[in-house]
Image (tube, rainbow, N blue to C red):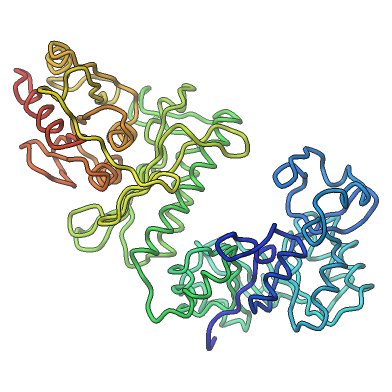
Length: 509
């Protein structure tokens, strides 16, 4: 491919940052055209009385606060929602809006029953707009039956590229962007087929994909992404950050759905208290696949499927569910840990705050992101630890720790008793990742974990440090990556040093 990839405005131009309108409306289509975008993706559904309308979801709940399915609503009822070019339009309206613009409409269908009606509308509506189709394989087969020459974008969900037999009648392979690397692009191009990726909203990732030679980028933030593809260089740290955050957001959805639906499979590893579930394995398989596709030059080590680090290359450390015993036993306090370690220190880290979010109306963890030199962020808000006050920073405060599996660690009883003598309360919640990173969120003044593991603690250590806290090792020295040591985190140096000194003073420590 030569030049920049085409940009496809996902559901029209609808990101507020880009001056868009409500998705899948004529206003969003017009905004995309006005911004100079020549490809526009829309989604179609069919009403109860057979009208083909622009709508992504199967119900009206998310955008219109109406729980009815679109298949239960007539067109007359649909047009009462919104007004003007911000109402739910007909597919024929969108086709007419593109007439004379030189634009192409990419029609996405995830319900095979919609394919026939949509194809008929395209055939019957006078327009010179280009037409392409993507979505459910059965839907695409029905489109080909009615329009043998139709441009079909086949969906692809594997980091392994399609073989020649997968590409019969296909003009574009439409892949999830996190799974697309250089080898994937080269393999598809070898067959004379284009590569499209979705849904890319980060400019650094867009610049990277453009450099790989992808032919098309579908995005919610077309203007922002366009600026990225026109950049002279890729901001690799920004790209690493964006991918880590996107992975955490997807893991949060998977965790929330598991909480809602119940854990179907619980197994044990080293003993009855060492749990693993299909959630752990599912998240790790996905994250490892993405990291290996996006960063082939990096090492990856995971809790469930392992990996190796040679000590010289950057390495991603992953624990998909820290606190699996809690998850397996219905206690909603778990976290996620993903950290990139370079030259012996974490530089990008993302964890879960176990509380405070929702996904599809279900309680969900909230990703917390830290980047070396760029701060710690939760839901768009920068986190800053609160300095301790008073003569004793531990008095009247909470200190958090964790067990060694299902057992105490040497010195733990003595430390708890000694802290109690100082009117300091100890809590043991069951996730080392959440325990350490919680210091950045004001959950306790200090925390101690008896043995540092980069799988569980590298990301959390960075979260604390970038929020202004302190991380110490066995010797009481600042250390962001204390391999082979305990790790002590404090809201400030006073709190961390006070907990370290008390631990060292305990006779069993």
